[in-house]
Amino acid sequence: MTDDETPREYDHEFRRPLPGPLQTRVAFDREKDRITRFVVQLEYHHGGEWHPVVRYDHDGTGESEHSHDVSEDGLHIDIYRDGEKYRTEYVAPALPGAVALDRAEDHLQNNLEGFTNRYERWHGIRDQ
Image (tube, rainbow, N blue to C red):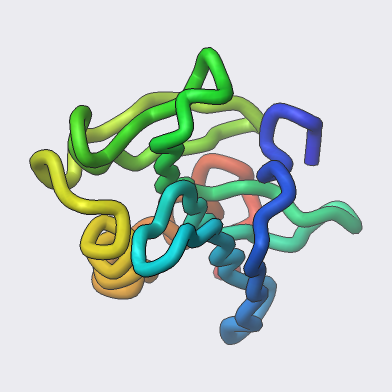
């Protein structure tokens, strides 16, 4: 995983193993009861490394030139192919950070099989 795909440090970070070569990474920063930054990322292990499949992110701090504030811009998903962002898709209108974090996790869970199948097809690693 390159520096561009590696999420920055967060106050809270969790990795959840999934069946097969998959894991999710959920990380966030909180100020009182407000989620100020988060990332929800599906990762696939192949070639001895973890690779991003899809990523949802939010940065309400504006500290990065690439920051996306879900409370202004809405929730989107970055789709990865060959180690690079392939495209971005809109998921939901403007939402508070905590609501967007829940929506991202739900969206990932509901689309997990499709994201995984597409990634395996694109990278020639689909089990036949």
